[in-house]
Image 1 (tube, rainbow, N blue to C red):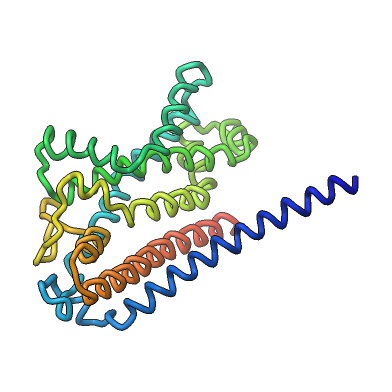
Image 2 (cartoon, rainbow, N blue to C red; image 1 turned 90 degrees about the vertical axis):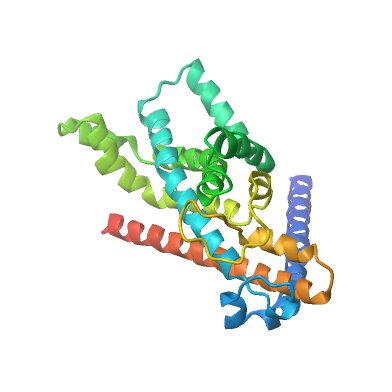
Amino acid sequence: MTGARRLDGLVHGLGASVLVLALSALGLLLWDVVHDGLGRVSWAFLTGYPSRRAATAGILPALAGSVWLVVMATAMALPVGVGGAVALEEYGSRGRWARLIEINIANLAGVPSIIYGLLGLGLFVRALRLEHSLVAGAATLALLMLPLVIITTREALRSVPVSLREASLALGATKWQTTWHQVLPDALPRLLTGLILAVSRIVGETAPLIVIGALAYVPFVPDGPWSSFTALPIQIFAWLARPGTGFRENAAAGILVLLVVLLITNSVAIWLRDRSSRRRDA
């Protein structure tokens, strides 16, 4: 028994040490970014346009492009992912084909993002002739979101008590009425948690957008889904590739803006999740 306790304490200490090390490394990275970029963050920087001069360069087109991409990709992936999860979990069988589909979806969640970029290039840019537009970029990121949305939605549906379904069916509701009015509202808070994870993954993606041909220099704000675009990660990458400390400071400031966008997006999703939880409990 004493040996088991010692082993338990050793594992606990090792885990705590790894956690402290990881948090320390993250803290150093954040401090370096804040130290280099906080002085460049200003209203002029947020509302300015790209420039060959680091002191006058702004981030407005990239910021607008990222917002467009996140909103459009979420609008594409959410209904398809939730619908697919409902079809698999509520209407699907538990046979061999169902297990094969589950394995493939789990594997797709671990595929490198650049593979989705190649798929988007072949399907959306070339086959469907969407060119290098926001629609093509958002559709590519939606593909990246889909496996995670499906997996988390299925877990949310599984957490709904079976008794709730049985009670609804016993009162004469159809399968679809039970799913729409009882199961999905009960699973909504956990579903939104999965959406937060999916959005957090795509907001900082660079490789898929570079592959499909997103521009590194865009001197205008996108005016519609068919407009050419850039995004915050691509703009940061372009600044880091240029010589001079000024552009490195711009890149650090861009990283801070990207973190704020991510925090705002997650905060909105968390607020919606908590609101739906309170309404369900009431």
